[in-house]
Length: 164
Image (cartoon, rainbow, N blue to C red; front, side, top):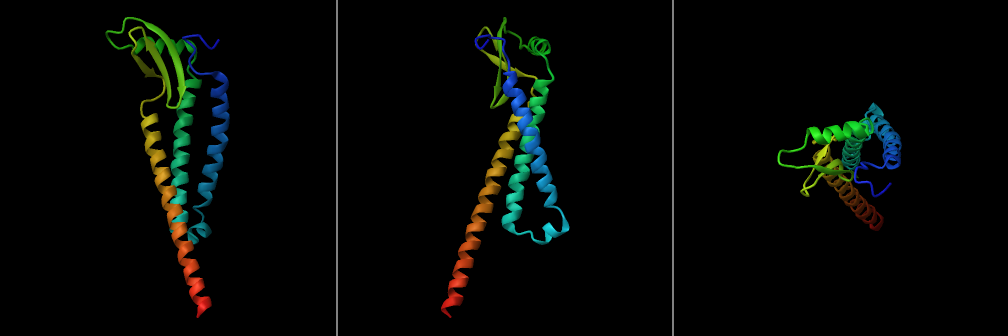
């Protein structure tokens, strides 16, 4: 029931994410491992290196997100409720609900005074995901900029050679 204040995470969405993230992570990890072979290392360029740094940050982010999803998946409703009670801060009179968020990944215990707090998902997951996302974006941007710079230089070099 969607209006249940003790709902937590939608189990269909949770399973779908686990079943999507897992093979994606395996495929990405396999690709990154293939980039470590001697022949791949000989063809390494700054563009490819920054691309692979970006993909490695994404893979690490997916692994962390999956780790958080597994914490939720393997903590049943009763254990989640117990964790909400166990970690309830002093001064919070009563709990009125529990909700699950996927972005950021958290299980939120809602208190009667309007405050809420997260349980079950390790506290390092979301801050680490932010850092890894920023690293992935910066590395991807560096790869794109270097690629365009190389193409521009290559076009100028070939047009100069044709004129000469």
